[in-house]
Image: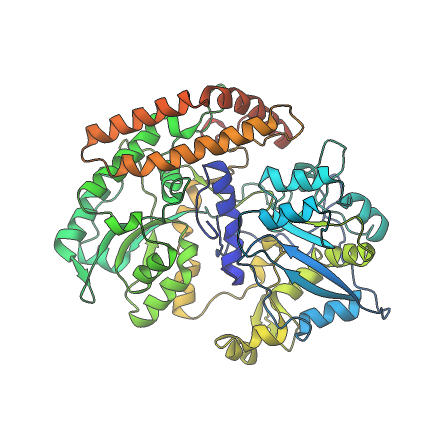
Length: 575
């Protein structure tokens, strides 16, 4: 998950997590994870993709570091993710020494032992925040509590004072603007509406995949609808049976969490479940008929032995092992989360390749898939009391510049990469040789992602030539035509609203309730029992206060669309 390509997708996964009850992937995103490992494809937006003036037009954003030699100041940079690690040998590798020499900053990274939010809460309670704080910006709570604590410096004021040449995209800044008119952080992996060309479509975050070689053994049967795909899963179980002497898992889902399962969140997109009514009102996807159809599909698959009992207890490591060993036929996940496992399997068996496909519901409706667009994953803020706020601001501006984006992704021309005739970059043989044993990361520190903008650098990667890389790069191409902007999918709660705390607690309570009941629906002994369990779950949600949350969601949803400048959020309503 610490690899560059993995982290890109965690954005998408976190969006999915936010949008649909905490989908797991790449870090759990959602909005996924996008882990998160996931390389996003799209169209190159030019040298100034990381900056724009307030009208949204591209602007110069060179933000070159000063040549003045500065006495280094040690700054603590807190990253609120237990698994995050700096890529290099901090203080010795080329990137961190570059930051020290050019910006006068000795970086010291701090991470929590666990992801329960307790360390950040303790720092807030004791007013002992470090110089720089990075946290999951898609979550309302951390950002708002940091803002209300009064410990953060307004990012727009810092930029105006110390890096006036840097012009963040206005729509991205506005998404994080607080009630006082300021924004207090800048995200990584944000996608401004100004970065995409008219008509351009990003790849979806999810990728329903299956084994191409096994499909060929079955004669490439029809999988265009849910019932036809179910029949193929049965054939895999009854005809193919095993791979390399081990039983095949016809359908593999994500691991289950206390808020459900990310695979169910992706499935409702493949089943074209709307999150908005035709007249523009917010719909909770869990209460829609097509969501029930997704539950029915998974229940039938389980009852027929096509989803393993182990899936309900396995953690990601166990799932990774099954994929890497070739024991899985199909995956309902964000496929990029398993790129390393796909590669491991391919290196053993070149024929064992996965391919993405657009599963449709029982009616054959085209899916609506969430793309990787969004307003970011990790938000980085500056402590107003930091003695190095000026240097930190200049560093952040530099990291968001074209030069900075190239540096963190590729390093130094002639040493870690070379430019090709078509303008793309190829890592040097020396750098590649050191990647396998970690020596390149230790020496250079490339891959620093806390201010990475994927759209700025994605088309600079040379087209893959190795068969395994070509295979992975093209995997989700067939799904692009079904990929849409889902930015409005989750109502953005307004922390200034008097009901904010109560509704946030209620939302969490209901998500946990649904997460506890979802496995029971899938594990039911018959379709009738599954439907009864589903109906009981809906009744329990209503009894627990869903109607109150729904009324609040309606208000927040309309405000979210207004913030986005759209009349409709659900792609199916946009003509």
